[in-house]
Image 1: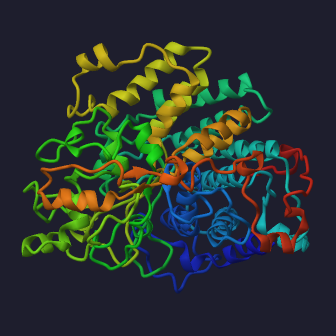
Image 2: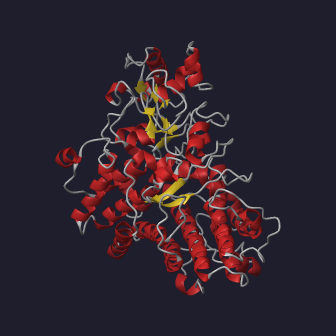
Image 3: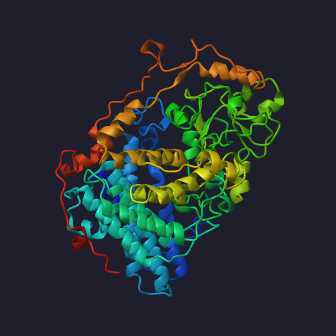
Amino acid sequence: MKNILKGIVIAGALLSAASCQEFLNRPTVDNYNTSNFYQTDEQVLQGVNYLYNSPWYDFQRGFIKVGEVMSGNMYWGGSPYLTLTANGTDIDLMNMSYSLWSVNAHANTVIKNILETTTGTATQAVKNQAIGEALTLKALAYFFLVRSFGEVPIIHDNAELLGTGEYNNVEKVEKSCVYEYIIMTLEKAMELLPKNAYIGSYNRIDYYAAEGLLAKVYLTKAGLSGSLNSEDLAQAAKYAKDVIDNSGRALTPKYSDIFRLSPKQFNATGEPLISWQWAISGGQWTRQNTLQSDLMIEGFSENGDLWGGWGGPSVDLADAFNASVLDDPSRRVDAKGNNKELDKRRQCSMMMPGDHYEYFWTDRVDPIYGRTGFNYIAGLFATTATDGEAKAYADGGPGQMECPTGTNCVKHLYGDNADHSAGVGTPADRMAYQLPTHILRLGDVYLVYAEAVVDTDNAAATEKVNMIRKRAYGVLDGTGVSEADFDAKYKVSSVTREDIWKERRLELSGEGDYWYDFVRRSYFQMDKVIAELKAQRRSTYNGLGDVYKKYFESDMTKFEYNPADVYYGNADKDYVGDYDSPNVTATSFTLPFPTEDVVFNGNMASDAVAAVVNVRELYKYNF
């Protein structure tokens, strides 16, 4: 199997890419090899640092296209992920597969190298910690693999498999076995990891990070048999509650702070549990975040590396937030661009005309609102103005509304070079930013717990949902409604499973998770999730660009349009769009293996029979 084999072999050359200090600075490694590197505690931790970035790099586009585009959270015109028709020759699918197998292979190799290094002064406690981190990231890769591709092989030991020569004959195993393998891997990681709370810094994985992931794995596995398994739900609840009660972490009071560059913001309370920790120093490609390039309009940064403005959050996601680009923006913002919506997560997830962001473009003054920050509509249209100041504000911008949903992404953006320097002390580089990508955070664990106990302890489930809603409504940071008003008007008295699913969508939108909620629900609610996907508004508006150009030229004082000219979908289809009602079937929830893998090994074909294995007997961690 070309992708899997490539991942196995490439991990053997790990030292050239292995070492970075605190995820940011890479020491010279010319004089090191695997036999003399893992000698000190510092070297052991440096040896695992790169697992937080480089092997994941080629998954970045798949992370968005699968998690957000396939799920209906994001529009990406012409993409097979929008129509749920991606096949085994799709380059993003191939890169996604290769990346995830590479994570597994590199993690296995790091573990093996640490175990086989018997010289030096490295302590057993630090070796255990590093192995626990590698095991957690390995489990995370398999969690993505099983939810994306379904039945997959288990590659437990690269060297052993290469030694047998049987790598082109490995078999897929049943999903239940893969989930058992993930659970076993995380259980071992938790035995080895310290219970440190990495708060206020770029966080490493600790015991509670692995435990939070284990809770989410159990919640996902709970429906695998076709109905919800009460024992799995109980395990999910137990592990999630321990993280919530005993990890020392708390919800970040201001929702937007979670997605900023500085650890003093995103990790002030320890909310992130597992993150891809990107770095731009050292001149090594794949250590950096490049998502802003794929997600944002031209001119948003100065490095000439932006082409993502033509895609953006979907009309259906705006509907979920009860927002619409056909409404006068004054409904959402006041005369200074301050958000007036109750749910602060909307503006932190999707840019809409009228929105102003105080944390982007902190070095520039908005020509409309007269304050520092990024004015979305001015960022789109200011380059067409004759005013020299306006041109300076948005130099290099598109001069038009690019995305026909009238929105663009917010999460995964760092802003411009001044914003990057303010956050981490150095400017960004071309397609190279340091903004972490959060994969699991405490807000997610709250909702995992709520869903796990919704039928057995609805009061506890409701309490956790209300905590998430309090932050969303600005109660925790004092920027929204008062706690008394929240309790009187917006607090929910009970929740259903469907309520929690909607809350998950709003809380985690843009974070690569929504498709995987559909996948796990398809295990036990196939017809329901198919109906939901078919009912989404996945298409676009016609005529928005001219409306908002005129609105900008009126200094955002006059919003008007003719409904006959500006509408959702195609007029000749009764306002149904080209991407609405996709052809979703039961097979849509399992991506195909890359065609090249199937060519190398017919056992990877979609109709190949998967094996059932006794995971705990076959794969034992003897350390």
